[in-house]
Amino acid sequence: MATSQVETINTNADKAKLGLSAVLVVGALAAFYLLSKQGQIAQWAALIVGVAAAVVVFLSSEPGKQLVAFGRDAWREVKKVVWPTRKEATQMTLYVFGFVVLMALFLWLTDKTLEWVFYDLILGWKK
Image (cartoon, one colour):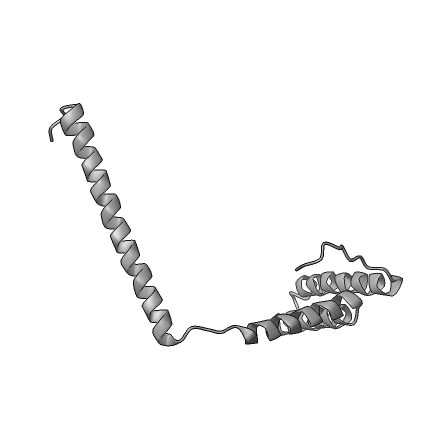
């Protein structure tokens, strides 16, 4: 069960790292656009290096470490999932398809019946 506690960033070092990370991303974007005359290689290199530096700084902060831990836990949970076999998945798909066809027929018949009752019997509008 999930806790309802809200975690905040407590240390000034983490606040500085997050701020530096944001500044690096903005700087990378600015460098990408400012280096348009230098060619695409320089643009993309500046963008990739800037974003990579921002990611490294972010991952060294406490929220970054918590994000990595969350990712590891999520991956561990995905490994615990019992996935259906190919046969089971095919059977369930066919059941769903059959149900959709039956519902389509039922709704079509209901629509045509109501059309006949209202237009032909009650209102007398013959086609």
